[in-house]
Amino acid sequence: MRPTDPRELLHPVLPAETYRRLGIAPPRPPQQFAPGGPVSSAGTPFVTGRAVTGVVPNPLPSPPLPTVASAPVPTPPSAPVPSAPTWPAAPSGPPRRDRSVAIVMGATALIIAIIIGATWYILANRGSDDEQQIRDVVAAETTALNNRDLAALIGTRCSADALLLQQQFTAQTFAAEIDSTLGPSGRWKVTVGQVRIDADAGTATAEETTVPIGSASIVAQTITDTATLRKESGGWKVCVSSSSVR
Image 1 (tube, rainbow, N blue to C red):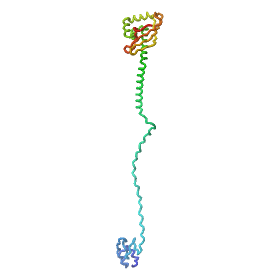
Image 2 (image 1 turned 30 degrees about the vertical axis):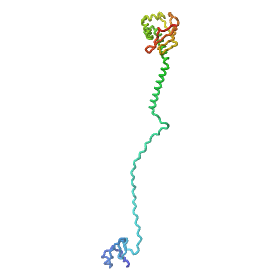
Image 3 (image 1 turned 90 degrees about the vertical axis):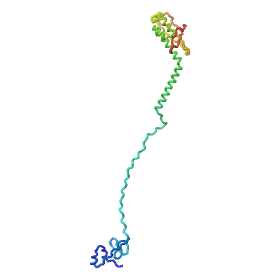
């Protein structure tokens, strides 16, 4: 293999006319080789614009590819996760009952207790209620006598006594009768003693002590008798016609 003419290194810069004037045969056209590319007239390949002989230089390291900093992929904002509702802490201890239910139950129990108590009181004190009514009607009779009031007196007497009084007296003759017995300013003071009641028969007796008050009185100082009473139309009435003087 002939040595390479230095002027050949100018290939392919010089035109063919210049080679002719220099008396140099133009170099052969470069041959194409798949792996190596064009070669010089000496058959050596051109590398980076110049022919080399025999020795294949170490390949130049490939320049590092520019590193393209990848832009961070924006993360879409995540939807806020709703927090769980906060419930008030349950009260410690046993569960509380509905107050309205407790109030209704308490009121019902109270009403039942009142009804039972009232019924028991009425049954237990029926006799004493009757006794108080008897004492009250005797006091009303005494007041009617002291006031010389015939109509009020008839209201305290049983039906048999009321009929007799209406037959015997008028309002004027009744007042005159009391005045003649006690005096114009006289009156009676009556004290009721023991009362006996026969509820089944509807009769009762009451011990009475009558004391006349007044200087013109013509009756005895003290009269003790037993008044007889009857229950008529739901109320107790005095029956003088059934009384006995001791």
